Length: 545
Image (cartoon, rainbow, N blue to C red; front, side):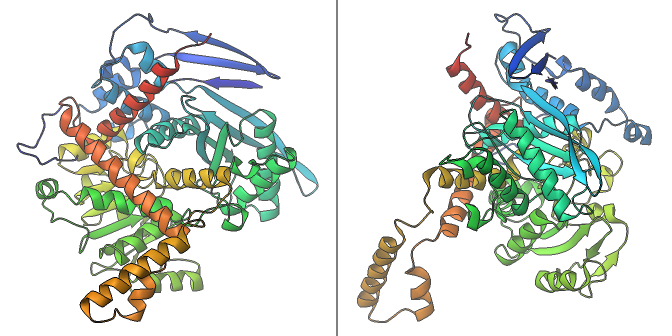
């Protein structure tokens, strides 16, 4: 098997406290268990040279493309996801003071296992393509989802693995970054065939050591979910008999198979917490022409799958926002007064589509949902949906990246130049990996969150309520007493942990933005925060042998 990997301004706009938020290569040949590494063009290890954007070939090419705003620029825009990651990394690295050899190590994707495997379909064998990329081993285990899609390729997988490293660092989750994929259409493939594909894919990872509770822990991604994770966990358990931590080999499992409450909603809920925190700073929202808080804000969501649906419901029901537009692959809905989400869900359950929902106007041009007038635009579907071709038609104040890589680097520059805030994916959709971390620790600890302390906590709360009632001379409403005197369940603890994680991470990113005059946008600030943490790990580990 061949196993290959390759690493592939403006002035500050606030006068006061407000913020306008605006190559080395390696090849690894694996023959059985033997690994031989060969690195090329690695700079002098004693060099103190710092990365600049000009150090990246792709950055240089795209700088030229940014010179004009013509339709020709849009037609030649580089949409390769790994190239976009390289440009984003280089921009952040140019604002930091680390030696080049360390930045090369941090940037490089350590290895990619690329393989083909047969699956029996009817009376014939079909060959499927699979990948598992491991970006960084500075923390273990490595973490990252498994994607089922027909468009997936090696560059996409290693880009997503790279993003996972920095995503984990931003939210202080002690994992390295990884990602996996199979080129298959999960929506047209029968479930029994998907199970065979998933179990064979898992077996390939097990045979090569690319999965395990202490080495590499997959999770759901596009096209996969609880069902696939349960199949993988069962396959791993069957091939590693007697392992006490076997079910920690994967997260995103059904609750009855070692999963955790709140994992399904985690990414969407994290998006809500991140946007809420961004809108909590008066000096920042003033620069955008917005008031503080989420209540009353007009929000458009592209993609009404797991992430988009949960984000929409939480924005509306907990934040008081108006969901004015929702888009899917075949069209979108628009109602400037707000869409009734429960009624929409009932309509989709009955018809199989969001289209022709009587509570909103149906539009058939799917991508145009991105161009609706709103305060916050939430792309929650695929990468590269905001490009030079459509960026000038966007009418939002904030782009909240719930998907991975929805905005191209050149399109982001246009948005920032217009004063639009882009809340980056490597921070905003980290809710999933955060709650996956909670699930993994639950599996390693073999005990449900809240089990040990719930009754004690409930008793203390009941005593406090009783004391307040005695002091006031009147009783609380019975419903309020049940709510406040019940103790914390697992879902309460998970949501609390996720909220604290997302709030703390945003504050850290914002502080980095304000502190470093070389940083001009939130994505670069987020990368800078992450690179500093990963660099500290590598420096502590040293090099052996």
